[in-house]
Length: 249
Ligand code: 13P
Image (cartoon, rainbow, N blue to C red; front, side, top):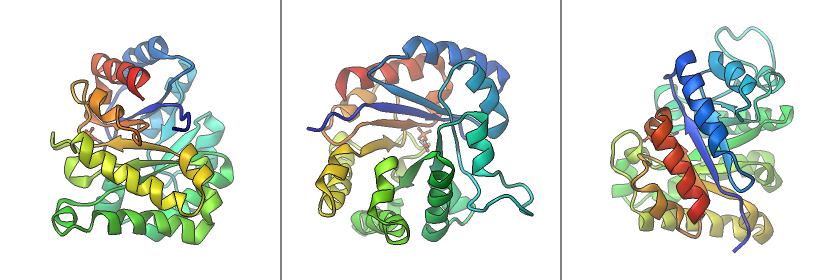
């Protein structure tokens, strides 16, 4: 297996406070090691405080546009200038609540790379789509939207996060076998275009990951770490999840 460095990312969603920044930055600085990337995705106003504490950060989304008259939007260049390294694109909550299409997500991916942020492309099927056995179809279309618009090479400096919608915030985690099967599908799909790129690509699992299930999920050959929601808000849980990625990925 290629030597992919494990990554654990904490998506705070619309949660957090300066108090949480203080707690979590102590925890993240204690976890830091050369064999694990830990990244925190807080709400925008908390980015600078985390960066000042030495935490690697990313935005939860960015505008697809260059600066201009887009009230309420945030420019990717500004995020980069603050010192953030990553941005999520296409999180299922952005897709379902804010109507982001595959095309918009591809544009955001492009804008992130244009300014030097690493995009983490979130993909995943709904419960209904899984029941109709459309998981691979849906995930492939979400990835193809980026490849078709930007070319395969764009995936080189990116991360993919597989987050089945039915597992997000529900406590219903995908089993290690279910998750591994989709991760393998993604890697095999990309390997048909470039085996080197596929072997080097970090693919994270997200959806109700906690300190009890992380070890078995991260032990799967094509799961390179996790994108954690609720459990990333508690220093103890997040630390335990990070430690399990160090041991198993
Ligand atoms: P939960 O871990 O709370 O299910 O959230 C997952 C997620 O959406 C991370 O981006």
